[in-house]
Length: 113
Length: 112
Image (cartoon, rainbow over all chains, first blue to last red; front, side):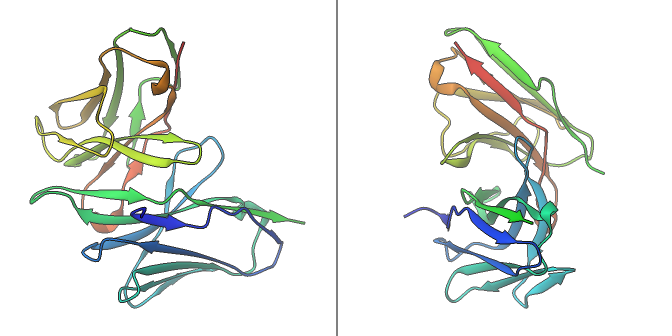
């Protein structure tokens, strides 16, 4: 089983639509969670952290369910500029002193007119 | 803004060559990472370092080594490049975990 699993998509949605991405992770000891956005041929950039209580940043809402080991990202009122690949990312302890980020393979979103 | 700078955007090397990929960050971060990204496989961790002269193997360290002599610089070394190391290489740095990592713009390496 992959450590972080996402539906690869693509999700093709019209402008103005609401779209949701889901992600599951296998390590119950994982400590922190993030969504990154990656545009074509560019590096990943942090979109938002995911908190246990859920958090919102404008049109974006992230949720975490630790019991089910499940993370979600909701995008409301999609814009053309939201077209990108969205990476689910999990921070976990690797050794006693070190930790690392593990990335899902990403979900591709294409917003159309 | 944190800046992570990778020395080359594109590189073409021959099989068997020794290849150095350099990464420099300007935010005094303890943690630095090297990932490679391939279609369908996502980002995979090669090596990381949480302090000067410290290094840890990631998920796919075979064929690679690293060097961290100074806090701001983390180098990835391909001892003898092979065609299956053709990939996009991404360096990242991070401090406190709640802020995630910042990536460099990547080096697209082609081994011929």
